[in-house]
Length: 264
Image (cartoon, rainbow, N blue to C red; front, side):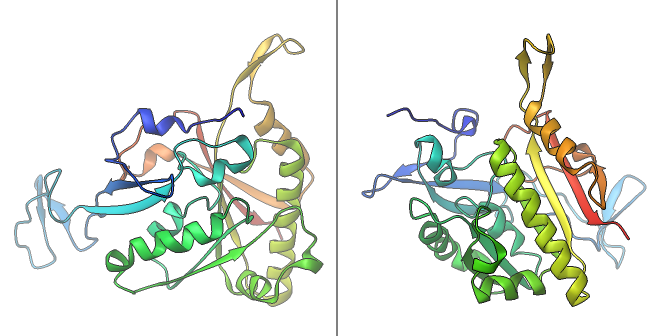
């Protein structure tokens, strides 16, 4: 059976340890964002009282580690069991990171290969890190299902949410069409409830050379743009170089971050 492996495993050493269940436990190091109360004065960092603050060095005890259990290689339909530069919910890395700064996180994915149970296990791996400050709910969301088949707790979570984060979900035309429909559902329920939604979409442009164009193009991304051109949506491209990188990985230069809102 043909298997694929995420490119990040060859780029960075995550000190992975293989478990008896066939998966590995990897440590994803990160730096906490600098305290907003610390500002620069005359080239030095000082706190709100004017006291000098020394920057943390790499490896400082104030750096953090998120422990994530995942597969090293999978067949194509189970790639969510790995960690990628961008991911749906996958194994939960992004959701756990988001839980540092939000009151509530709802982590969703289609439940194939035991992904949802694996996310729950990864939340447990990081219980001490989260210090039970935030609640992470894990629910199934299958893009291919009609909204009439959504579970009541999923609909409640959709109605209560403000920000939706989706990553690397535009790599197949059928899935892209289904994802666009999900965004329609999000915006429609937001308009009915009066709780507007902001959708953040991260994706990596996958360039290929096509004979039809005799050029290198990103057909999947272009297909998404073509299918949404008549939607009443507002697109804002966010410069990914405008904010720091806190995790250790090689950031793709083809990364696109889109902020999508409903146009009035």
